[in-house]
Image 1 (tube, rainbow, N blue to C red):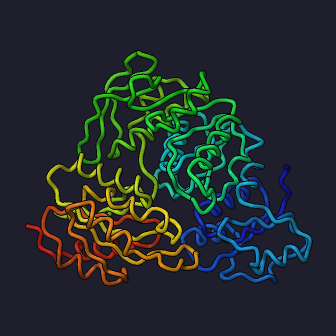
Image 2 (cartoon, rainbow, N blue to C red):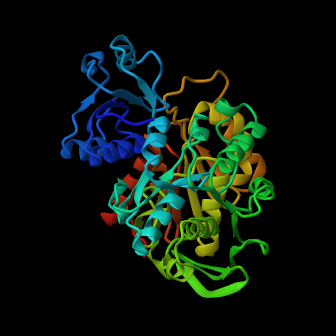
Length: 458
């Protein structure tokens, strides 16, 4: 579907929507938007000349628009959606608009239950280093790339493709990158088998595939695609890492491609999960025709997006914030701390994200926190969901208590967590906030407290 000239984006402040707005604007289209609250993304777009309204008002919709684009969080009864119907203006889902943008490019579409933003950012970084001048659309702000979206001059467009609303199978990229398959978004798919089948269909519709076969479900898909680029730690992966060593924010490994050594390589980010993300990004570059040696040389340029193991303070006490919000993500993040910072006491502050996710996964969070010495759990961040009767953070607290030896605190309101942390922390602690909501405000406040020198770490 060819895109028109004028679009209004409902929910424009979201990470995915703001990036799409930037791309449309860079292509010369007229863009406006609205959101429930002001945000850094809204501020950035406003500085670029995009009219952004706080609050949703049907009066900002006119019949001369070519479309109203909505995120998956926007309900059908939204005032601006209703006004679009009244004016006979087409209403487009964000992923459908993204699919239309990608039609004009050779595309790399990154999917998976975890690691999409990081892998997409890494692929964009490597492509830039090799002179591809790529376009990119990422679901998180990336400081090293100067934002979450960019319209380059080259033929390749690398995009993070979100599976949460089930619409991603409409995108048919040139190269499909599949990082892993978890049991998230069951409110959309209803079963784990349905999730796996959706990812399978996405990959099969691409011209080429990059598959991270450490994941058993991805490995099953790889058996159907003999010409796929397989990556991972497993011996049968075409592109693999072995002898992985962790040293704080640096991770090194031997890089092997089709049985040939590419030498000892290092990435300036922690965790085995980020080694896998880097391999997926490197595989994507190879599938796009990049030189493997030049791409491997650029691995040292990689960095993480905002809220992905983001260091807020390092002053005798390490304070980090991370977007991890599923059991697999939390477990991988805490394991990265244990591997890279041996002997440190880990204090994890967790804000569960969504009632439906908590309902489906509460028991799984028990094992996820096994590496933490202290766990603080807050109330659920609803993310616009209505409460589900009988679902609360208590299920997660019980699971952690039953499964681990961690000391567990339930502090319902995140505003009270900082006081508890001030009472708990001691020199050498590694404190991390995890969650996709606004739990970052807790560790940010704690970091300010530590910067002021109120806490003696000597």
